[in-house]
Length: 285
Image (tube, rainbow, N blue to C red; front, side, top):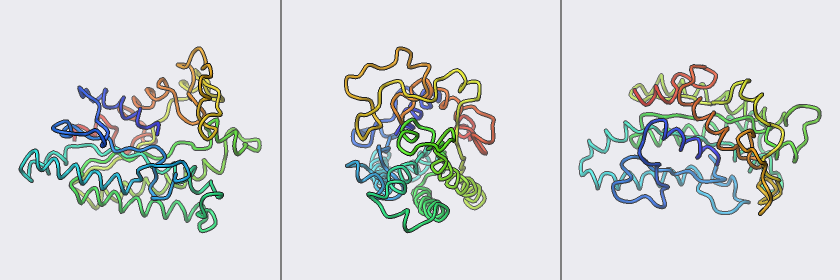
């Protein structure tokens, strides 16, 4: 999940001394400054990404967080202190892309595309996501940064696999992402209106048009074909200037592009990229 690297850069912008440890390696007092629960190939739905092997879906990540809450309570030995600490944390969540690219659009492994139209599927996903977010709230979370989906149809892998039929990107994947985002944004407003002791923000940061013009967007830095076809071929020679590419392999952005996106999430004033708060403002609330 490439958003892990964006989170790491945002941690630097927030001036933390250390990155958040992954749940599997969290121990002792290091959990008091944050924990990383993210898992590659994970989705809102438990089954998403199963064809790729082991992963930790969002429901399991929430269970892991409850374990951490118990451990925090043991360290602080005071429920009110635990509640205060959790209320100060930013719960940064980006999920949903695998529910499309490794579920809905993989009919050879899943039947969701036969059960739902794209509109119905987006509604079902956001409904389940809403309950998961509410579970986090019920367990003490009070600051949420909820990321929308990027343009799923503009990765080199999507273009290679599905073709574009004359468009710049794969329209059906981008339509799917837009349908999801169009339901997530009003959910954020609903939570802000109804859960008044919490703060929610919608984020969908992207580089500016000027940034895009200075990057290579239509190919990856390395030669694809590894993994399921989307990763770099082992021992292949990458491009000489990865800082000029949006994509490292056929699905994951380069550190250079991630840095642009992270800075946007942190300080953008565009309501299209952050509404109603950017990360910097959310952290100060």
